[in-house]
Image 1 (cartoon, chains in turn brown, green):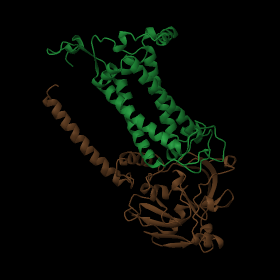
Image 2 (cartoon, chains in turn purple, yellow; image 1 turned 60 degrees about the vertical axis):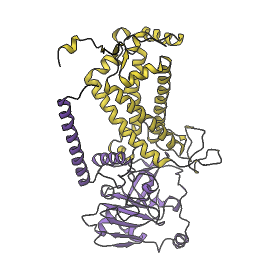
Image 3 (spheres, helix red, strand yellow; image 1 turned 90 degrees about the vertical axis):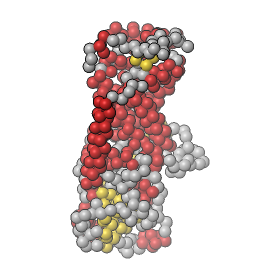
Image 4 (cartoon, chains in turn purple, yellow; image 1 turned 30 degrees about the horizontal axis):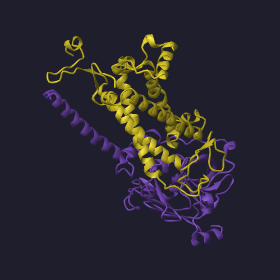
Length: 252
Length: 255
């Protein structure tokens, strides 16, 4: 082993100091520009943060691929996750006329919207692919309201950073950042392939986030909550997914 | 650099050890080699775990249990929705597998970038991996294949330099298989595809990308198996020592 020369020592010291302060600056910048995901802790935190930050730099405004009508899947597959609760069945028996979507949290005008209310808002359709993290996929036409329009009705406060959305089953909830919440293809979906959205596919209302994997497209959405921090929502990791071992950001 | 670095032979001898050593692998090559191996094994295990959740492969844009698969791996699945013919469902390991897969993918891509950029700067590819001019003939390849088939021991020159088949295999792994597995993997990211739709469209769709990702990983696994076999056949300890310490004894005896 060679003795360490003074030059090596000084060079290493300067490099280490530069590296440490570089990391500190990168961390501050990343926090300021919203490049840190809520599930940034633990041994997989660095990988998740790199993925999320890279996608936020690269894909803030890009559009998910849309397909021609001829590519709509004849037999789309629905994971069997229907909520078999009595409350849901009662709403379903009444044709969901008593069903409401609640918009609350950091908004100027909290809302309670019926399906008829949603249908009177600006409607958008998209033919996009649902890609499950397991590997399978299908293409369908999705009809609904861009989340951005519903949010505009409610008037989110300037400090809002995440939109939390919860399923009829309160154990099943998720959230997206404002880049995805205000993205034109993020759709509160109540129609599928020219018909009503079937319950098996998440009816009466499903969140479609086509730039992320299928598990971010939560079924049976009944509540939207605007927030500036994920603290206080579950374990504060951004959604129920990281609590079950899955990444919060599913754009990969 | 001091001029004597050019005139001094690259042999280091010390008074206490009579044995002479020759440099074999640069430090950067050794470090990136082992990081790559570690990452690849993590990617392989986590990738197989993810495959178990849907051991069916398709071609084109879409594919699910309601469509005809291109082929099916006859193993049980970690999801009850997949018809495998087995009466049981494996435990779900996709959560940690996906976290591990993407974290080690980052580590591997960054390590690979450092290796390729440094290798171009240092002449590593030109000196060590691009076949030497006299070897750029089919005859040279055939002669080496015949030598392998005969089971003849490697030339002593191979202690210090790769032969033409090794060079070609390494170049294919570095510049064909790894780029392909990274490309097909990125094509499975819906967010990346929104920014670069050609990444998935050129491959023929999402399911084609997934199937190609599987085959590219399989080709890399095949390389790993052959690589370890050849290392074992040509002297496991000395080859391993060369990739760890970076040097080989000047006059190595073959086992």
